[in-house]
Length: 440
Image (cartoon, rainbow, N blue to C red; front, side):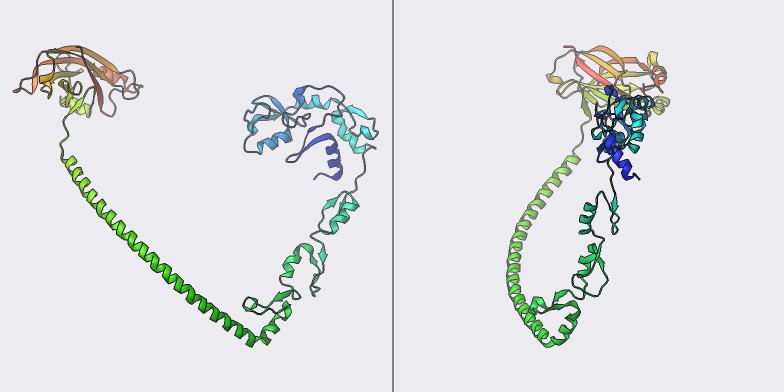
């Protein structure tokens, strides 16, 4: 713990900050010029126990940095860059440079002529003859310290630990001044009112005599209690009458509200039945087995279908709303030159709803993209042009004309990409996007 002497010397040497005690050296008693980098970026004094912030290379007092680190946001005051306790380290070279700066005695104004290095100034002040003598006086009741007899004397008149007699002069021992309010609540010599003051007894006496009063005034107190009860009963009757009226009025209002709510509920039930019927009708409506261009085709269980030499048909795909109808067959194990090694696809024209209103013949550009399912790039694309000369006859399901692509994509290429960022077969599924473009 700092002594009065050390606090006096530190007041002379250092800037004082409330939260951290003492910060950097004062600069008014320095004799030599000094570099700005020696100054603390927080208190702006000459850095005491200089510590470097490694994130920005600025110098600050250790006590100033401790103050900053104890706050919610630790930032350098010079450039607002954040730092933590891991980013500070003592700078011995800077401390040595600061200690060599020439200074005069901070008490030069009192006649001291000493001059020397900053690092020796504290030692000089311990024996400086110009330093005023400060006498510390301790309060014998609360142990608080004071710098003068006058201050100590003023404190004695208000010291909370000073023991004083009861203001009511009861027989209790002397009591600390801070405990007097609590004592007066129990003091036998305190003046108190009769407990029945609120119903008409205005008698007042010392706390020690209240029991005798209660014994002597039983008849009078009983009369006062009876009068108070009669008054209370009358007030209750009046209150009950008014309360019953309020209750009846509120019941009437609630009955009106209930009638309105009943109508609302009846309406909502009707709406519910209508919506339920529409929902049933919607659920029973068959979903059309067609889709629109572009068509994304997901085929599951590729390995099983390949082993069983399966073929998969797509739903009907319209080139556009009101456009041409097409269907695609995916031959999992390939056909022709791609048998056993490739995916093959066959494109058929099928009978569409709008065939009679469309132009014939028609030429299409088909773009088949086997999708990389890991990310939206590096897809395998295959483009092909094909003509359909006329609509499908009513007796046929699909046209005799069809586009065959035996080598859409090889399994070797798809398997080779597995394990990298390319996944054309993922979870035993293949995704193929088909874009249909009219060349008219």
